[in-house]
Image 1 (cartoon, rainbow, N blue to C red):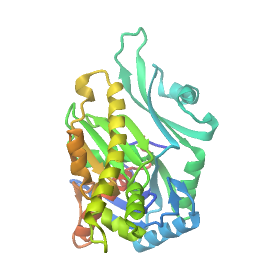
Image 2 (image 1 turned 90 degrees about the vertical axis):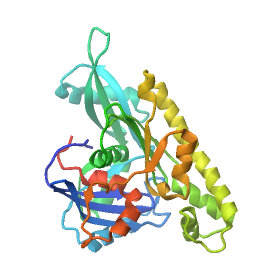
Image 3 (image 1 turned 60 degrees about the vertical axis):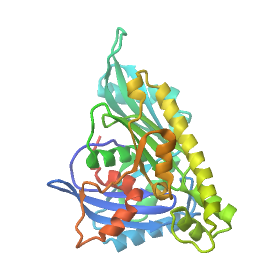
Image 4 (image 1 turned 180 degrees about the horizontal axis):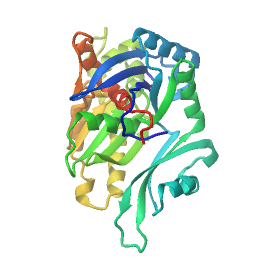
Length: 359
């Protein structure tokens, strides 16, 4: 695994989600980035379940179709993982050189990881030196561990599609990259990035543009779809349309509103718990107050969800636009389609700005 920041040849950002695969390629432009490729193909609900690959052959064929459709020439890709197989933790360690940290991180990490240390791949990023009252200064280190079997499953999808995985990121950090290239960073501002896909919700809370808290939760858009199917007796396709406020035949609007409100409450409860936990880990009141919420992922398009979130939490919430500062040539792309799909492209954009050799 690797972390953000450097500039070499472009990579394809390949976001392999539970409900769809998103492919993006960005080139650097004078003003920032320019969109070169953007494609999305849905997956059947049984292909990837809660982040676990159930039908590798079909997923591989979908990726191959997307590569062909988008006329992709670049073979090197950045992918990402999230969910219960990934642990992200900020830890404090005695001051040491990066070489010494490379040597000792496995043993230092063992006490923080609820898996066998031999079953995970570990990476780290030094955030800086802590100003403490202790005799010896300490390093603040961001530790990431991902289970090898999940990484191997996702790498197999990529390699058997004819691509070369050169960067493996974490969804929450891809969101951070996306935010950094599209929005102005305000000193001291605390922003919660919430990406809610089909089966996993990623939360990354930034202070002054840098991550201070991350959490993945197993809840997402599938919860809405399943509840609508169950309570309103709709097909999967009609339930998907109904949750986004599109016309679906025979839908009782009041009953639909009640279902959406119930599931909104479940999602809100998880977000509130995460915010409360973040506040308990932050000593200063000002630093623990969240100033803004940016929502992405398919659930951002659920009818009424973002206003509901803002009202209940008392914090300004808006749908993140991962293409906000990215140049889109209207001669090459259907701009209306790109913007309509934007909430689902947040992780993919964050991956597409990665470069081989980033740290």
